[in-house]
Image (cartoon, rainbow, N blue to C red; front, side):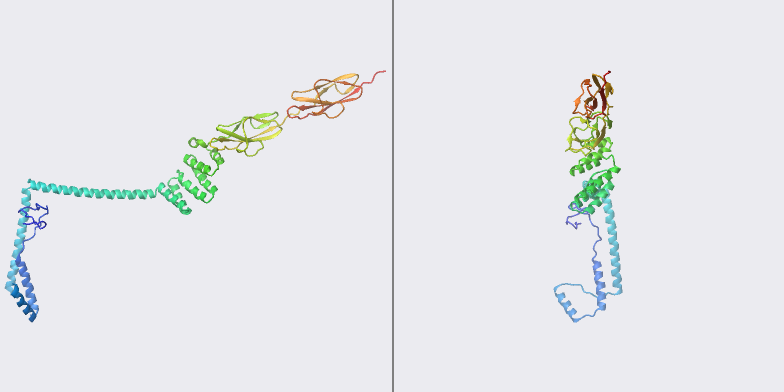
Length: 437
């Protein structure tokens, strides 16, 4: 038997071609009676139904001169039955032969399982099966990797980062409506991250609306008072827009240690006053201090202090009567001013009673000595001509000797040494005592 693929001789009973390893295809043996029967039947039918033309007869004679052909004639009933019987017998023998060869093939296969050829074929089959299995496995792995890649891409596109990327792209194209939709989606996905709020604020910044941009951050902080990342984003917004004074206002009510630690660079503590607010009857000194390492600036007229105000270097002296309001700020190394601290002080110096003078008004003879009682912190001034004394008249330093040749009016006042305020005036009148005759 020859292989239909490569033409190699295949030993009887072997089912695999030794050259190309192709399987032997088992088909029934060819029986020429089948063709004869087919031609005879075909010829009989055509001869019975078609008229013989002169051209056909001439053509048949010419062909008979060059080659031998089978003549076609009409078969009788017995001949037809004989041909049918022969065909049936041929089919029966072909079937028997096929069954016999199948049995021989199975028997031969069973008998040669231990042969080297059988082992080689089985090994080749196993290798081929292993290759096929690897190919299928690789195909499955490739499909899995593709599915995972598609899944990761879809997940990324709908993740916080993916949505933010789309929003920033729309913002760069000034498509604010689309950008806002993406940033809002990002907030829903993770409201604790500051990037989405920054994106929303940048939409307003691009349009020159800083108040709305600030409102985005402050509204978020109302629900997240312990989010240090959000505080850092707000402070960064203030720094970029040169609104450093708002940083301390933002942190004034924050008592979260984690937040204050995260933004400690920007913390600026308001100054403290050494003297409590209130009313005082003497000259006072007020010292300012702050936990913030930096400078302190203050005003004493109630105006808002800035870095252009008076820089604190020594205690503030309160020596004038009236109300004085001190307002101060501390500025840290980062240039962040604290909130304003203020205190009001009232200075009202007490007024001493009118000075005591002796002797009292009366008639005296000769020379008398007038004494004025001067309390601490005051200086006495007097006149002897009846005029009103002040700091420009005669200063009392010791008892005054008065010769009573005529009527003398002695007027005296006390003036406060600190504020120059004068007390009420004391007036004494001395007249000469008439001589007895």
